[in-house]
Length: 307
Image 1 (cartoon, rainbow, N blue to C red):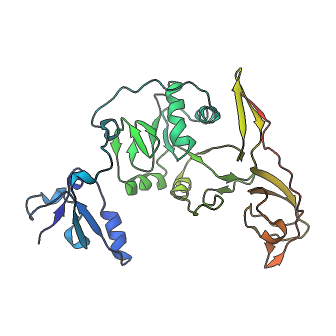
Image 2 (cartoon, one colour):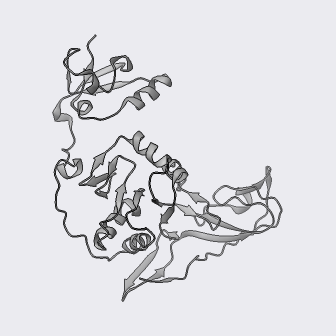
Image 3 (tube, rainbow, N blue to C red):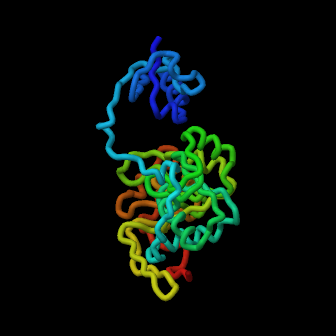
């Protein structure tokens, strides 16, 4: 039997887990290959996908590639990086504050958003060469950047191997983003307005994390922040943020766009302003739970942060 093999497979990629998952779910496995070779030409230990796991083989050509991979992202060549830009944006300040909580010589997982895009630059800016960064897409070491890549990585693992590492508690610290967060520690990372819901790798990462740091702003949609003279101040609040509402019935079980809370108490809501109908969306066992319609926006922290 002729077995398909690709240059990527012989270079050490590990797609076997995905192939197994597809077949066990009655899926179809399509292998895109650079060339087809006779059995015996490739040493058996170098093969990663047995022919029995493949349903369809598509022979590819180089001219279909969108772009070429940079050597600095593959780790085949160590490149001296340009100096990081000076601290000038609110997200730079958030990244710098997060780094203050990270101990020496820590292995640090970075989630998408400010952690992956800005924390590495904040570390370079402050000379934190002691940190070992990792992102779920595979790169270990180096300096992560937008898109799940890293400049000058030490190693690139398969995503399944990375998540084994995360779920086993490998990182000392995980720095993640959030959409909404409550004072009780409830975190929304899967529902953002009309976007398709999904939490990505958040649950896997947070489940095994030893320490969690969340990066983000407490309001959004028009938020304006000024930086100057060593301080950061909020000049205009965003339209979407934390609000307060008071329940007039006991046993409020669920708020569709807010935190879960039981009992007659003040309920902290995280919601898009003007979208939620409080009297309809707050329900208790199928009955309307009457909640004060008036919401008062309030920041958790003061409007000024010393840098």
